[in-house]
Length: 217
Image 1 (cartoon, rainbow, N blue to C red):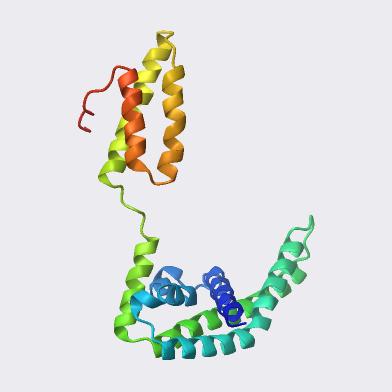
Image 2 (cartoon, rainbow, N blue to C red; image 1 turned 45 degrees about the vertical axis):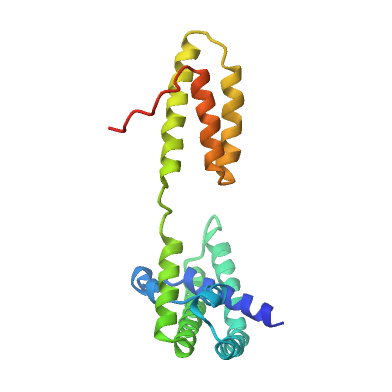
């Protein structure tokens, strides 16, 4: 039951996120300050969340969930109703605008619940814990930087592609090269970059391109 209530907190928070911009609030300005419940519990060990803090957050988030559940269900219902009205071939303007007003009311409650969750979190977490969570949140949102080996793999793949094109124009057999090529993608997807690079090196050797990769211009 406790897990279900925590998961519903995530639903409430996500619903509030979805409609944050609808009433004119700037998500770019507000988003950096929000602390989603799943972020807190997922990184509980990293931020040193105590048993007392966890118990208080679970209890109060659960109470907020119970109070907010009707608003979230209403949000979904009003959104669906508005979509059905707008989707008609000849929408009735008065009916659409009236339904829009209902949806905006539901959105307000969802956004309010989302902000309340962040206020609850900040009330129970130390400044150090909050700073750590914001750092983890930014790191998760940032695009991953390519490592040296990933950059090498990308450069070598381009060399294989160019050499294979030359072989194709010359009418040469690419069967062996295709065998190597088919193995590379599964290796990169599973994070086996060293194995992928070794496979590409074999393809380059087959193509007579086993020298060092030229520096990028």
